[in-house]
Length: 316
Image 1: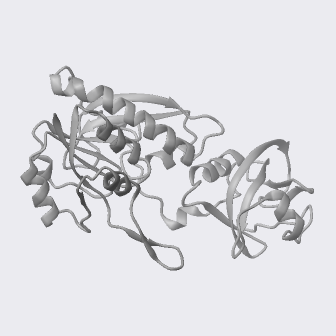
Image 2 (image 1 turned 180 degrees about the vertical axis):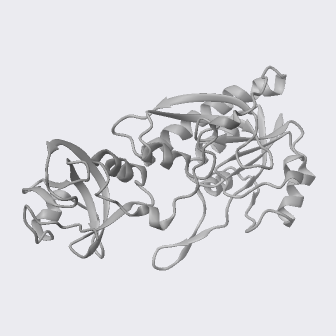
Image 3 (image 1 turned 90 degrees about the vertical axis):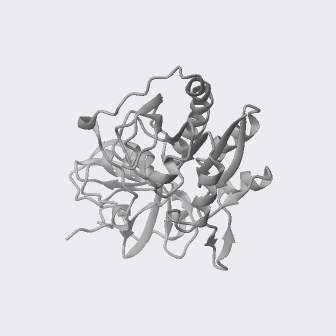
């Protein structure tokens, strides 16, 4: 069997690991994942989705806080696996570790490289209103996501997609592409393609200041911002002095001369707001600070103390 060390952390990575475990052609000899993190008010330590899969399969799990120079890294090097396979692991791999894989260290990346190198490719694809995304399998090198491309598969981004739905779709696409690519790599039937430097773009992790919605932007941009940050980290704004997360919106075929952030329509089940290009956006789901997530109907039923024509989101 071909021996593999797998490195990954979130839900995106778990189906990919599971597929390698289930395939009799491969022997996953160890799994590296990020350390367990405290969650909830009680700060209970929660294992990563990848760790849960590995533990269930009785595969050794290593969780160094810092991989470089760690004892865990030495363990992996001593294993001398045929492949090191990563999928959203969350740490850089030192060159010495990459060299430990006999057949190569490869990565399953959720973009059509060289577009969107970095930690948030799915978010950026939605934020930027892209019509397609995909998965790339590439060789790993010292520079982030810069290795030669081994295989790619495209996926259309539907109007109803958000970052969460694309995470699920791209995870399965990456799983299937990896399983179809590995045998060709092993047999030497693939010629890797260098990335086009002129087409490189980046998708760094989303920062807190990027979570703030700007209703002075065009309606489509605001809508893409909501979709791009759902279900995490979730976009927010200030409505009548209350910090409010916005989970779901849709565009309305309506024009207005009202200032951005003004209530264009308020009914029992509808809240329409003006945006910077004179188009209108409807809020469907939201969460005021200190309150549970709610539909717009529930919000309008007891939390919306304003009227049509009020500018509920203001800008200096």
